[in-house]
Image 1 (spheres, rainbow, N blue to C red):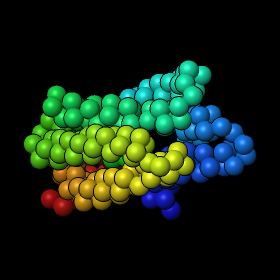
Image 2: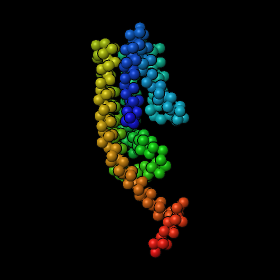
Image 3: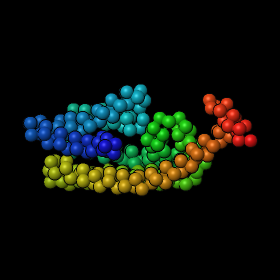
Image 4: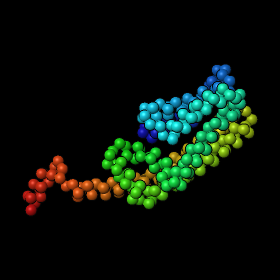
Length: 235
């Protein structure tokens, strides 16, 4: 159930724009506005989550910009293919940002994975932060993940444009452009799934080291009197 809850937003981002377009088009809405409304609906949850957290990350900023551009394009053009192509632009930005973050030495996947890796535990959060400084393997895995996903997003953006402007109809372009996205998503999930056990072991080791260090440096705690009594009795 937890895995389904994690994947649900991604699945909705793929299904809602496609299903929404065909539904709105069947109800008589023209292609431009059907694509605009259906494509924007999936991003509303991202905007709501950004407002709720009172923090806008890269994804939230891109989604907000896409929503604005969607309306502008719908008002300024009568080309449904151009409206449909807007998502490729943001895919390219996202892929470029992933590659740039890897080159800069702090991949986007590192802060993005922190909430899932720490689950609000302050001790785990401290271990997660320390692991970045202490483990070259940990940094290398995140750099590779960001690079591979970034390259995949750039390739998907280019392929999406080819499909949009060569498809025989707008309806064919709408569903055909999502096929490479499903393949990319599946590949990214498999890649991340293969790396998660390694990342978890590295953070677990760091957390154990920090915990043992804290106990050695701060032996006195709420059960310290009981431990001292037991030690005296053992002697």
